[in-house]
Length: 357
Image (cartoon, rainbow, N blue to C red):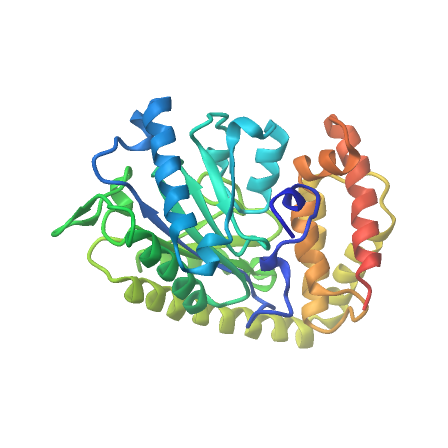
């Protein structure tokens, strides 16, 4: 899969539920490092000339590197992408919603063939180095981005202060510049109204919970992003360790709740999952919110072994494939909301039945 195919395929590495640990609860793991180049204005103060200087320096660092994963990154600037293409990258979690709004020639993306490693250029910071993998694998994500960062720093001079650490556009990222996160699927805790209390407790531990696409986005289909809030005063290892401990507790709690539902509310659970399967299999029109709710129920059925002929990876793929930009790319035309609801129902049936095991 090359850069061009990212716009036409609905699949990227983090969707492969067979390739990562604890994928029944943790859909994906991500580690992101924010970095800025020394002596160049931060992105919100860039003009086209200085912005292109940033791109040239980063591309040069990649091409000169002896580290193959860095050399293998393919790049594109946003003046060469349509609005739809940038939205597709955002829906795949390869760029942020904020970055998707830009059309400038000095903003862009470097990404590997399967989307597991990427660098946003001139988003909020000059570089946002990202590792994104399936399941609960923060350590592997961290190792990947740290290696990319080390190789880049052999050529690039970062904005760094001996007391404060890496300097970033947003004060909350100063220090390590690291944001570690996991995408969680918590249908059991949502059904038993436990999420509010859990997330309140998490907030007191320096963690935050966001929606499907991060800061400022809503929670849909019982999918949540859990990440660290504090970067200053902690090492990268401490940030990943703290998030790992909290995530492990959530995984165990979610599994206990699911087993309790399976034994204590067996008929209600089977009915809910069966209705979800029936609607997804036969609906002719379906909204995004309804589809994500039903996909959450269906995914629960797969993870509990109540649905055996559908793969979890197919449901992960559908989380992205039913989003507006992907539907329009698949159709080859712009569509209004009603047309997207019709297309969404078609795509769900196509991918669910294509991925029967």
